[in-house]
Length: 547
Image: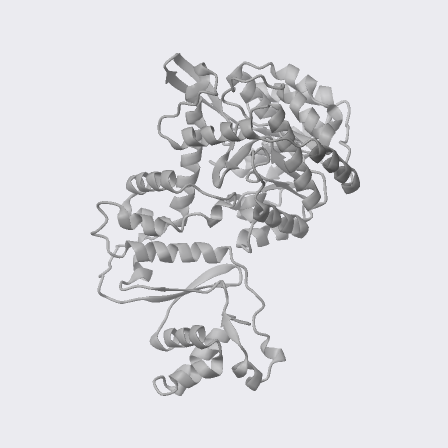
């Protein structure tokens, strides 16, 4: 039986390769591996030596409207490539009406939510052709509604759809402390046979002053050791339900690798010493398909759930939340989700536009993008597609007129980011083409190729504004007018400051879609030796695809 795994994060890639940890599996957040990126290639490399579990955070199974089919398709492609041992998602929602929040928002456990979750789980399982596990969330507030107890809700999901339960023991403890729930009773009420995996993690205690007095609330941060109380609850869980594959989540503020291994080994020891081991049943796709028909036959409307989610999003995007559907004494806790949301998107944009942060300063950049996020919230669960609108947005920000190159800098940084996630299409197979066929073929630039033109030395501005730059900044804004070629080569993104011959050839290829026409158009203005060198560069770097 598989015992304890480790969370797979890009920050840990090198340490994993160096230490070759003796863990039972790695668990990866699915959305981090969408697209043809270096991180996806690394995941497939690790897959050769370790089983992989895929843990989704962005499909929004609890939403009142329809699932994002493009997100589900990307997930299916990843599942087909990785062939994971487990696939999981959450008892939560994060999207409604074309707004997506990169956080796990609280789901009211009412009949409409049960119907919506069942329909979406059925849809997910049928699309993937396999059972999925649903994780219990961390709760920070309670809705002022008559609700089904959460363990019973999870049991009903398993009964109606054939899904399993991912029992996060830390989340049980955090929720119990935050909303006054009995953690052990919660564990007892879960269906033993539906549990397919355990999670443990660290949390952070936050002291807060409210209109009702001071309070302490536990935040599920995944950046601490597992606390003693959660270890005790895990022991109780093992005594009640037996062993399962388990994972210690640690997603940020990573400690020394030995600490991660110590936590993992402790979990493995506890599972090995458990008195019983019960393996959750694995439902076949035929069983899942039957439950799909049963679930859809009882489909109703989601008007109440939709209205609640719409109101919650409105309040979350405001600076002063005031949702009347939340228990009054806990209404202020919407700010927990609000803070998680804005911090996550700000951190992401700071990473994408790292040189712009260097130019503007961290505080000013974060303040600027805070307003941008309020006006233009993400619209899909794949956050890596978000941020292009910032380029136009900054043109309207007061006080930035004195940085004339800022828009070009943002365009260049976005080109690097976008290219990282774009796959290389079938390039020209030069071994299978004669010279005449090559010159006469209808061609175009690969989707992973972008040209960024600027009236400023944007390449040096970018390089010297990054936090990794070590040296004296020395840039004259009139030292060059850059034409940058951004493209994917192997596992990385490359940038070339184009000379005139290469820039002209790229323009002619885009205009004519044919190498012979491009060469003919330039034959009078570019030396034959330069044309030959440019053509060699384009073909060697696989910049073209055949139409």
